[in-house]
Length: 126
Image 1 (cartoon, rainbow, N blue to C red):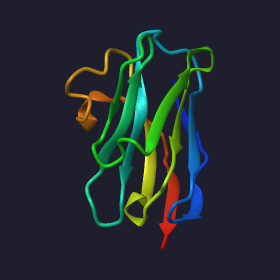
Image 2: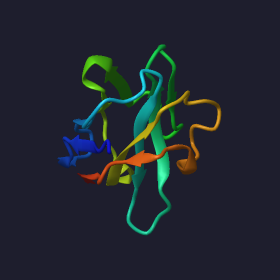
Image 3: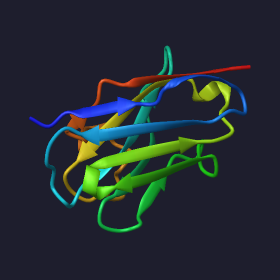
Image 4: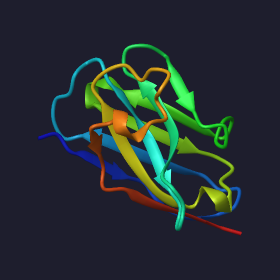
């Protein structure tokens, strides 16, 4: 069974940057949608950004548009999230997700992703 392994979380001050990485532990469909969701303490899990493997299609939550950039390395079955100008409200557990199909217009739905990582913590202080 394929697992998603995340790394790169940590603690930074507001305005700082972090880069998250996620790699699948085994082979996955060349047509896939990989990306990130997050969950802040006491809040619902929410989508952050995903991208499709075979095109430049990328999808971002409004709250991170212009500050976060998602990228991929298909050879490594990996996806990355570069986060700039971090804010305290970005604090939370970040989960890597995988869907072996298109991302599609319903990319924000958690139920579309059948693989989830264990999560990596991001903490942004004032």
